[in-house]
Length: 160
Image (tube, rainbow, N blue to C red; front, side, top):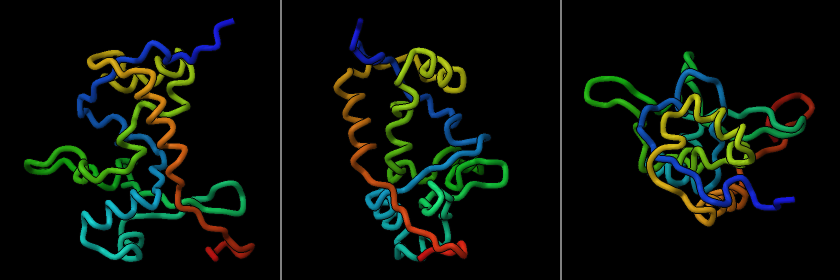
C-alpha cells in the first residue's frame, strides 16, 4: 500500500487572477489574528472598527462562532471589485492566509478527485508552476498553525 499523499510528486498551479475562488459561491473566509492585523493595518483601522465594518461572526460547532469576512449579496467577497481600473481583490497584498494558500487546502489536496473537482472551477489548477510536496505541506502546516479567531456564544445567542 502506498502511504504517500496524493501531492507527493507536487502539483501544478498558477493563479490566473480569474477570481473564481472569490466570487459567486457562498463560503467563509475565516480570519486569524495575523490576518486581522494585516487587514486592519491596510485600512489603518482599529481591530474593532475593522470587524464591525468588514466582518461577521458565523456559527461553528454549536457553542462557538468564527470571525469571517462579509460577503456581498451575490456571494462575492466583500473585497472583490469590478469598477473602473480595479478588477479583482482590492486587498491582494494583505489578503488572508486562506486566500494566499488556495488551492492548497487540506480538503483540496487530499485526493485526485478533490483536486480535479476544484480544477473544474479554477483554471489555474493543473497548469503552470510545479509546487513541491514540501511547499504544499508548508501551506497546510501554516493553515493548521494560524488559529482562526473564535468566540464562545451564550445560550441566548450573543457572543460572550
